[in-house]
Figure 1 (cartoon, rainbow, N blue to C red):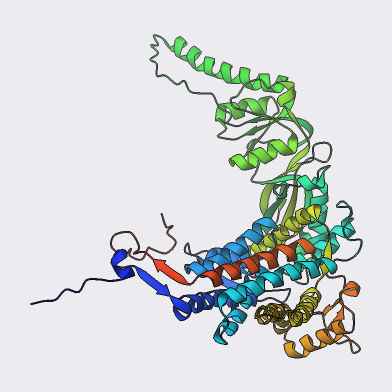
Figure 2 (tube, rainbow, N blue to C red):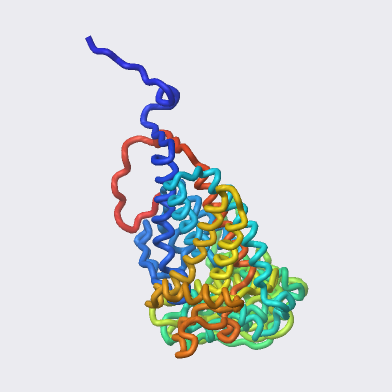
Length: 550
């Protein structure tokens, strides 16, 4: 006789096949371990000498980058606790556009230190309490470290913009930051609105053309469209432009009809009426003063024939987003069907020309005067992966410009701020009396991650450099950081950042540290993991390489 033993406790409540992990060992420490693994991946990519990661995603697309936001995006992290760190990194990327690596790496370091405290007997709630006090104190100290006078800046002054942007660009493209920062600053200043707080990052476009090198990169006021003009006219200057969203062609009727033709003459006349109708429409556009027609869809052969006859240049932009940007650049209203445009619907372009850049034919739309809403950075490089990485550096630079339009305050870069925060928080922990003091001291110790990583990636001795930095900061010089370009005999690699001109935006540091502390506390608050049985039928077989999930 078989005995069947009924489930008891949580097993009797949940469906068969669930997972339930609880307690310090199973839930808290396992969560911390997963987050540590993620931060170990991103940490070595921190800073100018950061290593590149080679990531191949589920579509077999190759990414070679040191941009943490791209890395964690393409890794498709499954562990629920590590996902919290990924979300913190994404929040930083959306809020500021730079500093995602600092957020993830710092959160991982906080959790690693929390693990040591848990193993010595502290309860997670005491660690959370200490971390909360520490982040409040960190923000106070961070405000004290702000460079005096940096809150007032002219966002159209290129020199001030480059100073604030250089560190963000150098972390992606070390050694090329001077050229890139200058290009990005030019592009951003060109499209900066009257009220800089309304700056839109979408107005700085990037076009990547293989070939050439970084010295061939340039900024164009207006747009650069990949592809040739449709007709034979390839250059027009100071012209009005009409945009038709649905295409330039004779429109078919919605209902079906039968035409009975008795003679050849009637057949000839029937064909001529279509011709006459298309000619009438194209002539109406030409009479309105437009010299350029932009089509959002197909361009019919007959319509193109008449466009050539009336000396109209025809461009085709199939992407509706590009079409919207084109309308914004030229101040044109897109019309739904081919008809005579009103004078208000027409836009104006300084020049449109088809040029050949590095073997690729591109249409350059210049809009130098008046409604200049879009600027394009033309990037040149030897391979697609180099161009992708350059594009990420440009994105970081443009996002930094948007952040400085909001808050232009700066703090010392090159790990000077982090060492000062570590020193001040350790001092603060000695004044606390409860068990929180150990958590606050560990929070301060976590800041050493930045100088340690910068030194390791540059092949320097981290312990030696951190002790030298503490020594200089203790003697009152709070702006001493690491000079990665090689130190001199007198100061070594520890130098005053104001002489090296390395500054970070206050707002980037503020959000990165805040999100990291929040993410770490969220992970520490979890004491049970309950996973239901995954839905679905039999296990999916391996898909052929290159296939999408759908």
